[in-house]
Each structure stands twice: as C-alpha cells, then as structure tokens.
Image 1 (cartoon, helix red, strand yellow):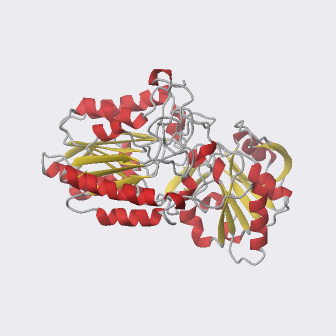
Image 2 (tube, one colour):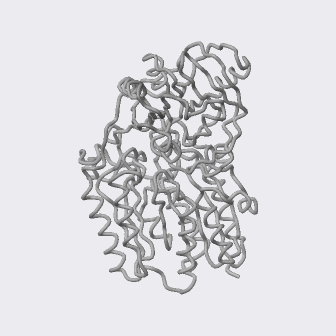
Image 3 (cartoon, helix red, strand yellow):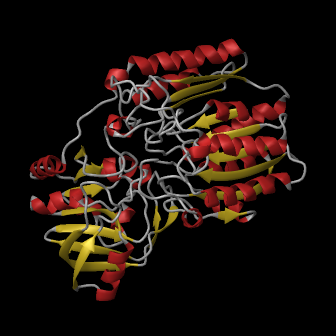
Length: 511
C-alpha cells in the first residue's frame, strides 16, 4: 500500500501588523481548525474546506495509507514567533522522520509565512522536510492564492499548487488537485520540469477577487492551458504586506518538458501584465461610504454591505479598530450592524453586566493603530453567547467556530458583534450567533476584504469598500516598505521600489 506522510502549517504574515502569532494562537486556530496531532489530524480533516481535508478525501479514494504528523494554523498577524515555528516544525519533521517507509509527503501550507528568524517561512519548512526525506521522494504542497512564492520553495518541492478562488471556496479542491498530481509522480520516477516567474507589480488584495475581472478571466484562461503536457499551472497574486524580497505575484508551471512549462507560464505572465490597469477600483472614506450606504438603503430590498478592508483579520488586522463604528454612529445610521470587534475585556464586561443591561465601555482600539482609539460610550447588552457555533457558508465550509465569550451590543440603532477571539467575518452565522439576523439589516459592515463575498454577495443589494484606519492599507504603496526586491512597482502602475538602505540579512530580521 502507498504510504504518504501528511501535515499542515499555515500562516499569512503581515510584517506591518501589530501582533505576532504565538504557539497558543496555533493551538486555538482562530478561524482555522484547532491544532491537531498524529491520528487526531485525520479525524479533524474531514468534510471541511481545508486543503488537507481535500487531500485526505482523495487519499481514501486512492486507497493510500496516510501517516499524519500535525495540523496547525493561526489567523493572519505579524511574524510567527520562533517558539511557535520551532515547536510545530519539530513535531512535523519528527513525525515524517519516524513514519517508517513512506512513498511521498504532502503538506498543506499557506505560502506567505514570515517568522521572527526566517523571511521565507515555507522555504524553510520545505527545506527541512526535504533534508529528512532525501532528494528522490516526491514532495507536494498546496498553497494559498495569496502565497508569496520564492525560488527556494520551487526548488525544494516537486510541485506547488495554489488555490484559484478568492473568496477561497476551493481550498479542499486544491488538496484534491495535489493528490491527483502526486498520483502522476508516483506512477513514474521522472519529475516534471518547473517554470517560475515573479511579476513586476504588487496587487492590492481588494482587487484580487476572482468573482470579478480581470482575475476571473485570468483563472479561466489558466485552467484552459492545463493539459497532459502541463498537468498543473498556478497564478498566485500574492500577499502584499510582507516586507521581504519575494513578496508579490508569481506564476509557476509543471510540464512534461521545460519548453512546455515555460510556454504556459509565459502566457499567464503576459495575460496578467496586460491587465495591470484593471487591478483597481473605488474605495470610500468611512463617512462617504456610510452616507452612500444610507442613501442606497432607502430603496434597497437587501442589505448594503461595506468591507472594512483595512482592519481585516484575514490580512493581519487585529479586528478591533473603531473607525467604521464611529462613522455609523456619527451619521445616525439605522438598522446597521458591524463585527466582529475583537475585545475580550469588553466581552467579559458585557457578560458580567448581563443581557438587557447598559454598560460603559472603552470598546476596541487597543492595537495601537495610528488614527484609531478605543470607543468610549454607553452600550446596551442585547444578547450574550459562549462563542461556539458552526459556520456553514462556502468559505468556512462547516467549520466549528469558537469566538470565546461574545456579545451583541447596541448603540443607537447600530449593533456590534464583540468576540474574544479573532476571525474574519466571512459567514452570516457570525452575526446570527449573537442574535443578529443579517438579512434583516439595512447596512452590514464586515471586517473582511473579500472572503465575506462568498456568503454575503447572494444577500447583498450593493457592495462597497471603505478604508478606515487599520493594519492592511488598501493602497499597497502606502506601506513603509524597506526590503522588497528593487524595481517592483508598489501597486499597479505605481512607483518602483528603490531601497533607501542595504537590506538586512536574515540573521538581523526583527525578533
């Protein structure tokens, strides 16, 4: 029987964000499944929208025996601490080393991890695993669409396959695609030729959505280029908030010949570069966005939904800024709801006061974002929750969620979801668990950039994007870059990056 060692280690790192990812964050998981060890991995990774879960399903169908090591993920944030990285990696590497005879390794990775010691987290992960298994054993990994892919990642893996949807409704499908490609590798001792290209401009995440053009058309063309000669081809628009030389979009292809791989990669590169002008759109200030939403709501039959894009916890925000809440209250918005504001102290105070009570809080604003501060006001506690529920929408895909002690607070006619853990508001259940029915609201303000669209677009009259203070600027050129590769444009048609000082070595990366 074919035996394959498997594991998962995912983190999307915003090196400009205020809070690092500790081992405890990976234990809890945030919006991801909680950390699992050994055989428990195969119990957790079933019938959910996660790459490893899709691979497990395909492996069962192929009759493969899986040797699970560890699965660990945490909400996007600043750097992964050295303690967290080394503890997870030791368990993964030891699990593979002690697995006995194996035929291959599959890893579910993100592709945009930066640690306190390693700029290229996945490059380090793949290098350590390759060192254990040797150069001949197949090593395949799934990646997020937002991966910042490096030459080292390409070198150490026999294949990397990235998601093709944003919102990421195809994470499990990508795991299944990895199983399909791995089956090809196991049929022969030959390896596919690799082609890797890095593109010359950063793409803001708000314009990477695959529901819209130009990205939708790019992925349609990409799928059409796959064939027996090029069994897999990926375009990763990248995560434009990691300050290191390999941040940015990339294309990678695997072909029967080098010419096959090169030709496919070059076609997608030309297509993406030809659409540089199209990776752009309208972003509103908080007040302008709220006032427009209020005007649209007068005749709308469904909610007007605003993305609070710069405090997206799916991009490293702490999900606690108050700019959009202030704008809702300041403009006397009616029938409005927003969330999830991460504030364990306020959630605890609401639980102590009890449902129906009024409570004075300094809500949110504790992450130190410039231009933001706690919102000191009197709130009504409308409903309390222990924070446990299932998120059945297309993005979370039926995951068990744990937001910790939570509350629905009201100020005027604005309701606020407050939780004790961070997770991107990408499922309607994240309102319902504290008693807010999202379909009955006139305005919803979600701390998310794009993932919310998978579950909310069907109920929306109109979608708007607002830029209140937060850790993930909608304008990538506004970030204080110091270590990108020279010449890359800081946004589509934007200025080229020029180092103002020599880049720091890996050994001197911030701790």
